[in-house]
Image (cartoon, rainbow, N blue to C red):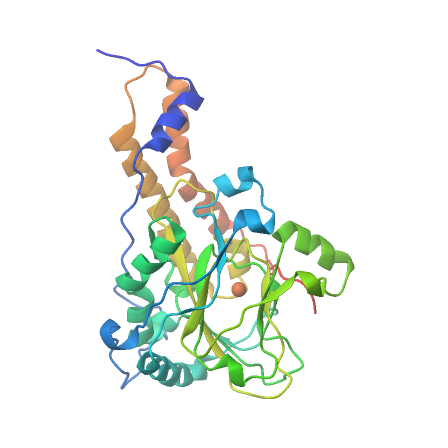
Length: 349
Ligand SMILES: [Fe+2]
C-alpha cells in the first residue's frame, strides 16, 4: 500500500487547497410555532423586481487597516461596497408593501429599538428575494467567493424600522452578528433628516478602543454611504466593519432590510456570533437553527475529509482532521447547553 507520511501542517496545507465548496442548506419545510405567512402578498419575480448594477467602489479589509493574518481567516477581502442598485422600482414597491405588513411583528433589543426578525418565515416574498440565486451569484462575484443565503433563516430579511422615539439611534455602533450581508434601503434615504448609514474607516478593534474612552469616533474617520434612493444596497463583511444607523432628526418612515450570507467555502473562521443572538431570537427558534447550521458546517467538512484524506499511518494527522471536522457540532452542543445570559456587543448609549 502506498503511504504518505505528512506532517500535520503539510496535510492541512494540501487538504485546504482542495475543493471544499459545500452544498447550501435548504430552507426548513416547517416554520416555528406562531410564525404564519402573510396573506395576499405580491409574488416575487426576479425579472420584474431586481435591477442589479455593480458597485462602483469596493473598500477592502486592508484599506481599513486589517493585516494579512486576519484577512486570511476571512472568506473575502471585501470590507464594504459603495451603494449599488439591487431592486427595481416595482421591487421596491413590493418589498415596501410587505415590510409594512410585517411591522405588526416588531420588537426591540438593547441595540435596535424597532425591528422585525424571522421575516423569511412570515413572508413568501421576503423568503424568495432573500434566497434568490441570482442575487447570491451577483454577490459571489463581488466577494470573489461562492456565497449562499445564510443557513440560519432568522439571519435572512432582518428589517429595521425608525424608532418611535427619534432620540434613539436606529442602530448603534456595532459589528454584525453574521459575516456577510447586504443592507438594502426599502424607503428613500434621500428624503430623511438623519438616519444615515455610516461606517468607521479603521479596524473594529481600533474603533472599539476609541469608543471605550470617547463618546464618539473622530468625524474625519466616519464614512457616510450616499444612497441614491430606495432599492440601493451596500454589501459588507459586517462582522469586520464597525457601522451604525444614526438617529433621525425629524420623524420619518425609514425601513432597511439586512440579508445574511455564508461562504460555501467552509474553511474560514466562524463569523456568526451565537451569544449575541440569545437576546435577539427566542430559544425555540435559535437553538434548532444554530444546531442545523453547525451540523451543516461539520457535514461539509466531513464530506471534504472523506474525499481528500490521504493514505497515511500518522494517527495524529488523521485524528486532528476528524476533530477539526466535527468541532462545529461540539461548539453547538456547548453553546446550547450553556444557560448563561449574554448581551449583544455594541458601543454607545
Ligand atoms: Fe449591522
